[in-house]
Image 1 (cartoon, helix red, strand yellow):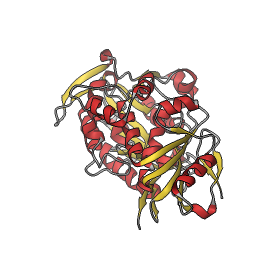
Image 2: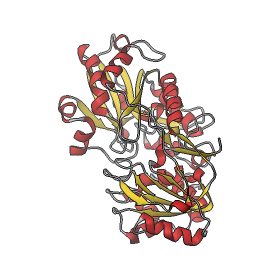
Image 3: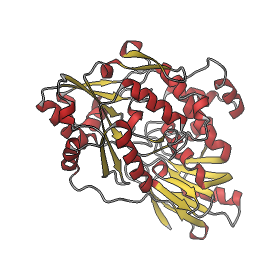
Amino acid sequence: MKITLDYGESGLEVNIPDSHLLAIAQQKDEPAIDDPQTVLRQMLARPIGVKPLAEICRGCSSACIVVSDKTRPVPNTMILPPLLEVLDNLHIKTTILVACGMHTPTEGKVLEDLLGKEIVSRYRIINHLGEDERELKNLGTTSKGAPVFVNRHYLEADLRIVTGFIEPHFMAGFSGGRKAICPGISGAETMKYAHSPELMEAPCSSSGIIPGNPFHEFSLEVAKMARVDFMVNVTLRRDKKITGIFTGDLEKAHAEGVAFCNKQARVALPAEADIVVTTNAGYPLDQDLYQTVKGMVCALPAVKDGGTIIIASACSRGIGSDLFRKMLFEMRDVDSFMAMIKKPGFFCIDQWEVEELIKAKRKADIKIYTTGVPADDLRKCHVDPIPSVEQGIKDALRKHGRNARITVIPSGPYVIPYIGG
C-alpha cells in the first residue's frame, strides 16, 4: 500500500507491506470553515465567557498580541487582520509579541512569512527573549514556589491578547491557550520549573491529557498571574485549513477548543503494533530534530514495549539548538543523563527535549529517515539513521519476525492514538 506521510512541505510517499499492516491512524478531517475571517469577526463580537472585544477595549490605549513562533503553523495572516481592525478602529497602539519561548528569534523573511509583509511593515513587532532579564518582569511565585518571570512588553500593555492553535501536545496535553504565556513569553527561571523532571516525568504530562496534568496546571497558573484579557485560538486539519475558531475567556474558550480538537485527533487502534511508522507532521513542525522528538513521543501509545518507531522528518534546519546538540553528543547513556538533570540546582536549556527523547527510547528503538541531518550526527544523537522508510521497515521486520504488525500515523503528533474502543 502506498501512503503519503506528512514530510517537509511536499510530503513523502512510502510503501507499506499490506500483509503486515495493522492500522492507519488518521485524524478526522472536520469540514474547513469557508470564510474564517468573517466567522472570526462574528466571534470577536460574540466570544465565549467574556464581553465582546470592542467593549473590553474601552479605555485602553495600548495592546499586546502574542503570536506563535516559526515552529507552529498558525494561520496568522488569516486571524490577525480582524483582530487588528478592532484595535485600529479604536486607535489602540498595538505591539505584536512573538512567543519564542526558549527558541531563537523569528526574523527577516521567516517573520514576513509568519505574519505577512503588511503586518510586519505596519506594526511594532518584538521577539520574546527568555534569557534577557531586561525584557522580563517578576510576578512573584506560584503556589508551588516557582518564580514567575513574564515578558515586560506584554505586562505593560493595557490590553493583553493571546493567539495560537490547539493541537495535541506531548507535555501539555493540548497546545493553545495558556501555553502562549508559559512557555511562550516566560523567562528562563520560570522554565526551570515548567520543564523540570518533576513535571516532565509525571504520567499525566502527556498528549491528550488535561485533568491532573501538572505541566498544564503550572502553565495555567502562570498565565492567570500574567492576565489574559482575550484569546483567539483555532484548530486545523491536515491540510492546515481552519476547522474551528474559539475566542474569549482563556479557560472557557480553550476548553471548548480542546473538546473539538480531541474529537478530531483521537484515534482508536485495535492493538499495539510491533512497528509504528510516523512523522512530525511536516512543515513547519519538522524543521529540526529537536521538534521531531514530539512525533516520537506521541507514537508511544501505539507501539509495543521493545517495538520500533520509524519516523520521517525533513529536519531542514538540522538538529536544533547548539545546547541540544551538545547534550546529545555528550550523553554517554540514559541513566547518567537522568541522574545529572535530577541533581538539585542543575538546569540546562533544552534538557527537557533530551529527556523526552529518552522517554521514547525507553520503550522502543528509534529509526529516523531525514535528508536534513547526516547519518553520523544522527547516531551521535542516539537515534538510528535509515536511508529510506522502506529500508527501516525491512530492518524492523527482521527483528520482530514474520508476524510483526505495522501501524502508520501519517500526521504524527497531530493524532492521539489509543488502544480500545
